[in-house]
Image (cartoon, rainbow, N blue to C red; front, side, top):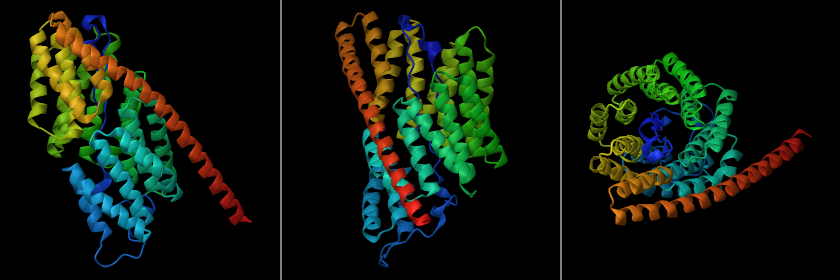
Length: 414
């Protein structure tokens, strides 16, 4: 589930610190089960539909396509959204908005995903639906974390968790609690490398998975715990206990994910195993698990963990001055970064490739990667400034909406 900071392989590479941002796209959607947390469990069709349109059937078909073909899913979702708007199906409209934003995110267009969901956030919050509000905050947390905005992501996870804790318990309550604790574990593992906090949240997610006897969730959590315990060793690389505890959890994750046929999490577990063996400088084992991961194939949601393992392995070979062996892994990771719009990872990979070709005395290619790095670095700085402004605008709109609701409730009270 969760990617490991690959500092061991990269920390001393040419004397620079290379730390790819964890891109956590593993979402076990509650698509297969009905929402029971709140009003989402009420009949979905609240408008005046004709008999020729069945929202539940069409929306479920679109959700299934989200796991297979994003373009086809979007082709279905936009007309369904228009139908919901025309007929006044507010809950259906909100569900479509969240799903469309997630599809754009999956295609690597994170800015479009955020713009789409930000625009509709006041409408969704205005429905006062705990389930929809939780989904909204969960998605916004994931989108922001993928861009490296950890503080903002953590705030959204906390907001979602508060909504879940205050809502009447339903069938989806345990899922959201598990999911949010796992997301917080992932965020704290990358946010100031707060490993004790990460382990604490993963342990809370583990307790929920055990209480629900959900082995798929457990495999997911064990993958995260494996990464967290491995990170304990990064402060003192001479101590191996954290790596070995990480390996223990990851082997459990492999068994549970294989049993549940959760190939997405199995792939992530293989990538995390590759990372630990990279950190231990066991390149043969690292290559073995990278190959196991690649054999599973996978669409965009697995490529994030592929990026991490490929980059770590390439960096390890570069550190050992095996540049020709390093380049294919680094360039494959770079291709995946471009396909998934993982710009912060791409920034670190371009820096590494620039240095690799510099040491190979291939100055033409070295200069090309340096130029790519410089352009992307400047672009990311501009993006961060724009995101900060957008967050302020969202806070303002939300505050205004809260004031309107407070005034309305006050008038009703009188």
